[in-house]
Length: 294
Image (cartoon, rainbow, N blue to C red):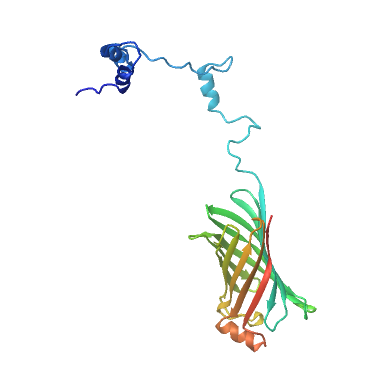
């Protein structure tokens, strides 16, 4: 097989003003030709790095097999404690034919990469007329099981009040929280109350970026009950639903004022129980508030 003539050699022969060099001399002085002419020539290798003073190579290899000394920093700092808190909703709601409400929904956590103490709270209170309201507080242990999903377990305390009367309820909680395909945020919680009632809540929300700062957030919240609970105006099956749409402007990622609308309604048996108690089974609200992260 014929060898290709080096391009550099041809260029040197064509340049004017250079000393006349024969084509054979250029070829003979090329590195490839020199290697062929002297196949036993060894390429120079760089010197190995110096060994620590007083140690041989065997000593260095044995030392590298031992665990790091006490106080040596880990190569990957994955055991630091971090914390985060988010007020997803902190708003004032104007309702049709009902008193206005101040409502909130927040959550936060503190812990390591995989294990965290997680808390969640939501509620509302009305002060324009009858002093009434309700709130829930969940205290959970959270374990990251996949890169986008956490399993949680703990307790919930619920409280409702109207004027001077109030009632509370304790429940055990098991939850699944994470990011579903399509970047849909999901939070599914299952409750077993101290009265042996089984309930569930599922929340879905999605952040649609209109611009880099303007975000439209649709949100769905569904409530379920395994049995009728007339005292709490709950019927078996799908109990209450909430459809929200909020538009926020992120001056900073941590601070975002917003406006929106919320439509809440009760379903089937729950709607009949609510109407029999003299309350409305559906409600439209206009909201304005701020989203804050720490």
